[in-house]
Image (cartoon, rainbow, N blue to C red; front, side, top):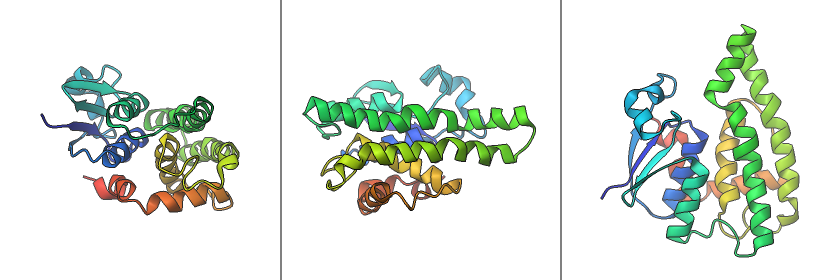
Length: 209
């Protein structure tokens, strides 16, 4: 039974799942759901996910939505070690990951930014909106991971949930001109992750339709 990922190349949530699938060595068929063309609101996609979001993953005879839930499933079934066995460290890892996936990402997605533009009537609102939320979010994230500055990755010696959430957000930061070069922990992690095939192959530039 083939694994199918319904995604959009620039979706941060989809990017996360692509990284995890690559880390797990799971081959998959990618089906593009163009958010700008509103393919996510089509009857076919709403059948897959009533929320009209991506990603949607068909795997092991099941269908899953919500990237964090998908990552949790892959971690539990494929033993990826995305969170520590130590419950204290695991809680800190989830907090750092959620600081991006739950706090930054939702207010910077396509539909929210488009609404901000429509309400203001000014296209430049989009750029201001993105920097307004991404910049302080990354500043806080830098502090959250600072106690783990000796680790190979964000908070562990192998890629974790934290790294999987960070790298797509850095792609967005680069896209919208948010400067994080002064954050030594973030730049260290970005360099480490960018060397791994699993992260490279998941990059939007590599999967763009």
